[in-house]
Image (cartoon, rainbow, N blue to C red; front, side, top):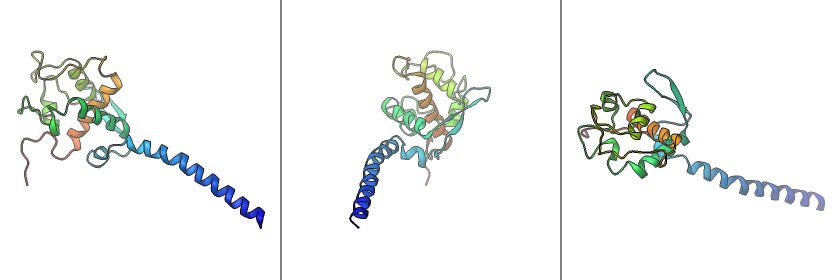
Length: 167
């Protein structure tokens, strides 16, 4: 009986120790997932987003889009609240406006190219409204995650880049 008590306590100790070790790891992993991305962009598993104008796609995970959202909040939100464009309200980050740009900015590579060297909506001259994002500021992976977030928000987020809000 004494041996079984010791064995039970030993096993219970191991289980508690494992739980304490694993629980913080799960919390850290969950902290990297943005609830907006999961709920409104409807991303729970990796999704395919258009990479280029040839129609090639690439998978972006919930973590990628969550990282892109954080970059958007840190670097773009002042001018692009809810996908609008405060300096130029006629052109938003809606999918329709991204598709209508010259060249179109409706894929990851096109958005990255725009962010690296911003041009006006008609593509005729440099844009001074949007900050240029050199690789010294954001790595290629970071800027692709940012572009992926903007594209997915344009595809799925309710109210993203709309002109008016209807009841």
